[in-house]
Amino acid sequence: MTIAHTLKIEEDRDILRIQGLTKSYETPQGSLLVLNEVNLSITTYTSLALMGESGSGKSTLLHLIGTMDDADAGSILIDGVEITQLKESEKAALRRNKIGFVFQQFNLIASLTVAENLAFQARLADCLDEIWLAQLTHRLGLSQITSRYPEQLSGGQQQRVAIGRALAVKPRLLLADEPTGNLDEKTGDGVLALTLELVEETGCAFLMATHSARLAERLQRQCRLETGALTCS
Image (cartoon, rainbow, N blue to C red; front, side):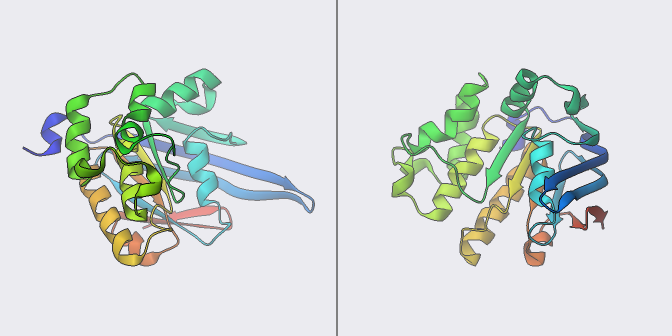
């Protein structure tokens, strides 16, 4: 039985829809426009690579989608909810329940074991599914090391724990910011391949920021940020 059989999967639909998103920052030299009326949509079962040079706005866009920053203008809908109008408490609930995050820095909690890190976000969201977590742990190849602490793990193992933590809540949207940036090529390729398999099987949408054209080609769609504008293929 595949993981997909353990989840309730909906028909293809927009999980993320962005319209006219604009963001600028004030600098000593004046206002710096980072995102200029960006439009983007991602459906279930879809993986999309967000490309661009350092400083092009990739992380800014992910932070806006993840409700960790506020846009100057525009609309962001996640699973049909307009997030730019939410209160802070509602944004926090959305992050806990609908969005999974994977970062270049693994951001594991050093004082928690692998098992505890895997369950952390799901416990916060009060949606821990022990059966799903056991399946996820096995699929990520972590079953034999659940009692270890982050400092006892390799980089690839730490990133797999981070992916498992993000997917434990069964998110509608998985956001990843250079998730293989701290891994060697072989390990990074393996981590990305496993992530894509889990995305396809669970039906969530996956948006990954990367500067690597090679990795971007592994995803179904590619978009590029340049001088504030987003173009997609």
